Amino acid sequence: MPKYLIWFSILAIFSSLAVSKEYLPKGCQSIALEGTDIHIKAHADHLLFLHNVSESEIWLGNRESAKLTVDMHPGGWSVIFIPSEDANWRCVESQTGHEQQVPCQSVIALCQWPATAPRNVQFKSSLWLVENQSIVVAKAYLQRMGWLFDKVGTKLSKQEVKK
Image 1 (spheres, rainbow, N blue to C red):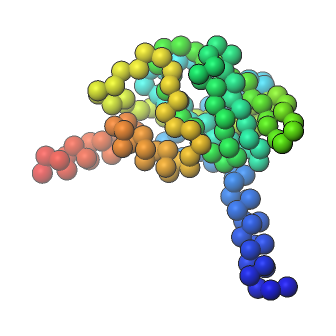
Image 2: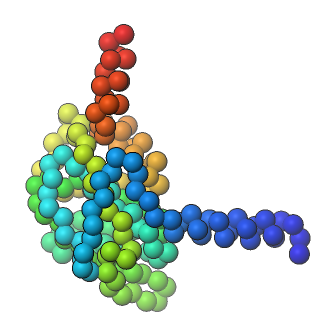
């Protein structure tokens, strides 16, 4: 067997392990899921981070609003802001030629991150801010859009601006 095929096989194995790895980023407060659905109460200054920990595409179907339905790729992170209304989702596993409802707790990791919205933006309804990105890309995008995550980092950046 040629060396490049061996290396390709090893890379494929480690790539599949990386996709299925479950973790929550530091600072994101874990939310335990119970039952088959996701039920979230509104929190004005929190971003909700959802991580697809399965190896399948997962549809999060919102029962109240079709605009809050999202398709999550394996290993992908999506972020939603829920300012004023509660949110309820069902999880549907989608594989070629087959779809089935699955317990959300078996396919989604969920955490909330206290965050301050950009000053020039006021959200009156729930809104997907990021869909199917790595956690690094998702957080970088949100920071670029003006979201502030940690108080220490915010204070340091304000002090640095004054110097």
